[in-house]
Image (cartoon, rainbow, N blue to C red):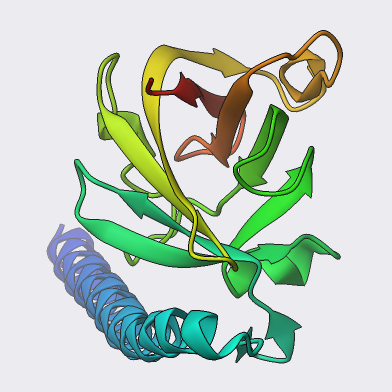
Length: 194
């Protein structure tokens, strides 16, 4: 009986130790993500400022070797991010990416992809957008167009209808990100706010 009690106490101590270590690891991951996110946000703020200055001088602005083709400003969440052309999955770790569609602020369905980051960056707060909210796109010429949300829904990763480029005679914007567990994609559809 005494051996069972000692064994249970030892088992309890080991369980508590493992639990404490697990909590410490999770706290460290959270702190690391926060620091990494703040560093990336500072870099992005600097690049956005440089982009706006370079529009006047007609110079290109780059982020991590990728040319910025515009910026997206999400009014509801008070964020502004650079837009680059999608090349591969790593592009999504750098900025918001133009995946398919026309040039920024021209007629057609412009599809932008953005990561849903644990640090809160990029399209992490896209789920907060609702019908009637607005997003602004600025192209390299300084042309700003405001878009208004008219639809919000989820799709599976293999559903590609939202990328459709046919029969568009107006400026449309499609924002796409994964949900928190990456099993679905959140899609926000917007059109020019005229």
